[in-house]
Image (tube, rainbow, N blue to C red; front, side):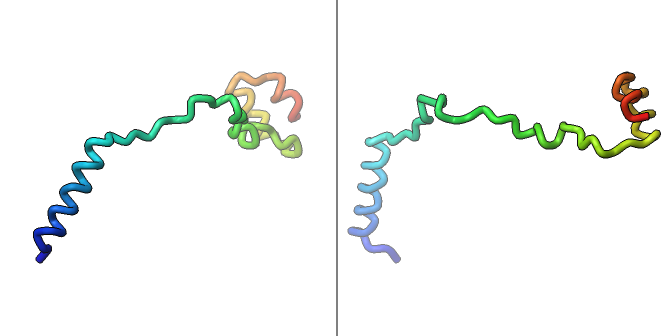
Amino acid sequence: MISTSKKQLQSELIDKFIISNPRIEPPKDKSHLPNDDISKPFVEEAGGLVTETLAKIYISQGYYSKAMDNL
């Protein structure tokens, strides 16, 4: 069992924490962070894949110029 003085010390520590009311503030200046497009490698075309199936997919999606490039 915890002794009375230890309980009192813990209680005082908790009270002190509550009174000090600490806050974690977000950084105010975010200009130093670059705005990189992390999706770029996933949406770029490889360029080496040329198939009739891919051309058909492009046509079904309405990308006629891409379909013509792949035929």
